Amino acid sequence: MEMHVHTVAGYQGERLYTTWHPPYASPKGTVIWVHGYAEHSGRYRGIVDYLAQRGWGGVAWDLRGHGRSTGRRGFVTDLEEYLYDLTAIWTHWREKIHFPVVLFGHSLGGLIVLRYSQKYAEVWRPAAILISAPLIQLKMEVPSWKRALGHVAARLFPTLSLPSGLQPGQLTHDEEAALAYAQDPLVFRTATAGWFAAIQRAQVELWRDLPRLTEGNYLFLVPDQDPVCNSDVTQRFFHQLPAASKKLILYSDSYHEPLHETFRSKVYEDILGYLNAL
Image (tube, rainbow, N blue to C red; front, side, top):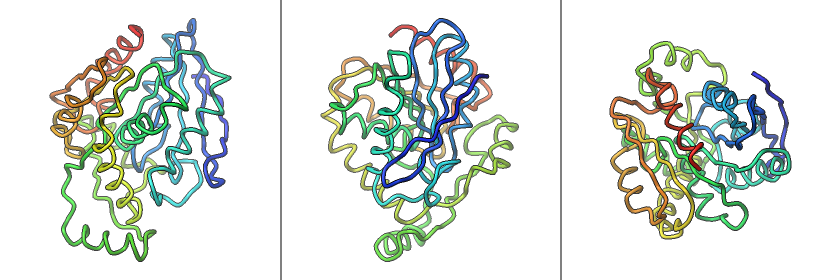
């Protein structure tokens, strides 16, 4: 798999680890990948390589505080910091990649992509937006003591780290994929109070600004057995989405990560089919 590594200057001087995967076949376009919380862009190599072999190049990057990018692990003061970084990624790559350009976000990445579409459509409107298991509302239980401590710490000590509670077995039925996640040195197991407060604010704002999403093409990949993010709430959000061009694919046997499930080849095919129909 051909891969070129770049470091992109992000907001407030953070250094964002970025990789460019050129298409092997005649270029059809480019997907920019936004990963989920506590993971990194390298976990998307399978789908990125699959698409590159079929003409779709890929730009993958590690969020600030994740993977090989700089920044305190799992900390932001506001979701806006991720949005500024995404603008930096787009600005760096827009003259170097093949069009059309599609934006993909999983979990936290899904929330980032949706908020970006609500706030910065005048900066960049992708040809399509693909969303996987978006962090619109958590489903996994947060103990009351941790929630109470988090609210206090968000004001007084926002960098306080607490165990996230996310378990490898919640992500996929594929035991090898779950083990790879558990042993991945770039995956971390904590969440900061400031990050959690920022996500809660962004989730409220996402619903408030839902009427802004009147334009664009949307594909939602929703895992129906997701123990991390609430798939029922995601489907309600999708049905209220005012954009005319939207499609939802429900994976009835999937945990949180369809791209790492036992049937991921089907998910790959679904994504490729949608891209080729743009």
